[in-house]
Image: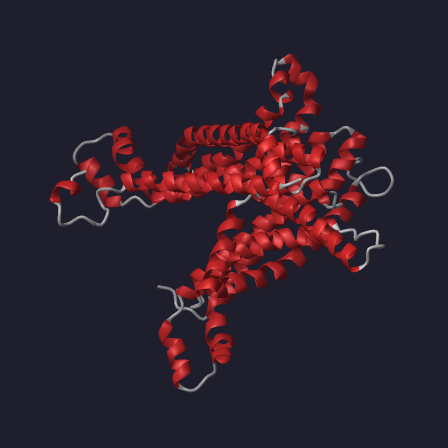
Length: 240
Length: 235
C-alpha cells in the first residue's frame, strides 16, 4: 500500500493515539510538577537524615529502566491482588493507563525534583538576605523570591524533562495503552505496512517541535526583564 | 523467595544471569558504535560544508526527538525488510535473511547514543582553546596531528561527564530490546514471571540489578573524571 493510503485510512486511530500520548505526558508531568517543589525544598533545606529516603527514591528512579518500573507497577501489583482488593485499589491497578500514569509521574517527580533543587541552589543568597532584611517571613520569601527565580533557572531543563517524558510515554504501548506507538503497532499488525511507523515518527517530531516552541515563548516571558532589548529604537515596545 | 532466585533447576538465577550477560554484551557493543556515530555527527555539524552540516543537524535533531522504542521498531522492521528485499534482488530464490534482534538493538541504540553524543562532543569541541590549535599549526603540525595530540585529549576531558550520562541512559535503554524478543535480562525476567507468577519479586530484583549496574557505572565514571582532570589545577 502507498504510504499516504495508510494515513488516509488509519488517521482516526493515529489521531486518537496522539491525544492519548499528549494526555499521558501532560498529566504525568503535571502531577510531578505539583509534588516536586515540596521534595526540592526537602532536598535543599532538610537535615541529611530526613533527606535519606528521598535520595534513595530519586536514585532508584534514575538508576532503573522506566520499562522495568512500569512492569513493576503494572504486573507487580498482581502479586498483591488480595490486599489491593481489600483496600479497593485493585480497580486502579488493573487499568494499564493508570499504571503507566503512576509510573511516569513517579519517575518524572524524581527528575523534576533534582532539576528544581539545582534551580533553588542557583538563587542568589543576597536576594534571600535582602528579603529577610525587609521583613519577609519564610513562606513569603519562598513564594516571592526563591521559587520565581528557581523556576526561571530550571525552565529549560524542565522542558527537556517533559520531552523525555513524552518519549518515555511510548513505552505505555507495551502494557497495551493505545498511544501513538500503540496505535501504530496495531495498524502494523493488521497491514504489515512499515510506513505507519514513519508516520508515527513524524507525529512525535511535530509534537516535540510545537512543544519546544511554546516552552521557549514562556521562557521569554519569564525572563522578559533581563532579555536583551532588541527594539531599542522604539521605547514603547520595550515596556511590553 | 531466595529459592526462586537461586541457581540450577529450582531457581531462575542462572537464566537471569545469562540474560544479564546479553544485556552487558549489547551495551558493550553499542558503546563503540555510538561513539563513532557521535564523532561523525559532531564532525558533520561542525563542518564548513553546508550539506554536511545539514545532515549532521538533521540526524541529531530527529533522533533526539523520537522515542527510543520507535527507533528500535523502525530499525528492526525497516532494516529487516530492506535486507530481505536486497536478498531477493540479489538472488530471487533465496528465502530472505533473518535480521537478528541483537543487531537491530546495536544499530538502534547506537544511533540514539550517536545523536546525543554528537551534541556532547560538539559542545566539548567548541570549548577547546583555539589558540592551542593555532600554536600547533604554527609549529607545522598536520591537521590530524593537531586533532590527535592537542584536541582529542582535551575533548575527552570536556565530553566525559556528558558521555557518562549517555552511557547510563543507554544501559537502561537496553531493556527495550526485550520487546523485540532478544533474550536479555528483562526478557528472561518476563519468562520467569510467566512461570512462577511472582511478578513483583522478579521485577523488583531486575530493578535492583539495573540499579546496581548504574551505581557501579557512576562510581567508575567518577574515577575516570578524576583521572582525566588530574593535570588540571582547581580554582
